[in-house]
Image (cartoon, rainbow, N blue to C red):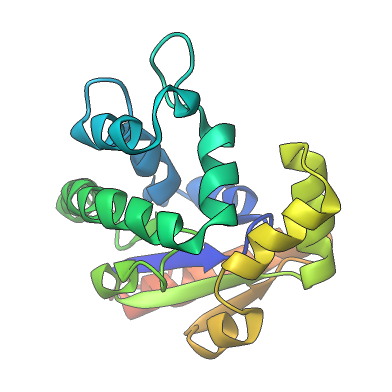
Length: 203
């Protein structure tokens, strides 16, 4: 069984994933795969550089993520073009990673993806878990973490699926607005639930 884990930017997906991993749950992160497909030598990076020019490349030939982000968040059509180039490649690479998880002995695994619903990656999973925090928390965390101003942080949040829609599509929700201990307790509850759903008898 594969559980798709998603949430808005800065909702704490990585922290929650590490808590599941501590319980022995394997996982694949779509963000990691998204970075893989735009590494030097990958065809996606060549297409991006051809469209936007040297301004989106660092001196060493790697992708200048900040420069690209500024372009695509200012121009929705460019964001759609970028997604048309990267999403199919990410999806194929994810299938390969998930096949490896399915082949091991764990009763379930995680696909962690900020764009689980938007990209159609939810079709790759059996169940969905949304990590949720208030929008004001997302904006504050994004501005601090990514060193952007509040306006850009708001634009990043606004470009994602609305919080209400994400919650409506969730099979399960983890409220990550409290303490780390509360989060870990909820992860332990969900782990027991998922193991049961996957047919593993309780320990």
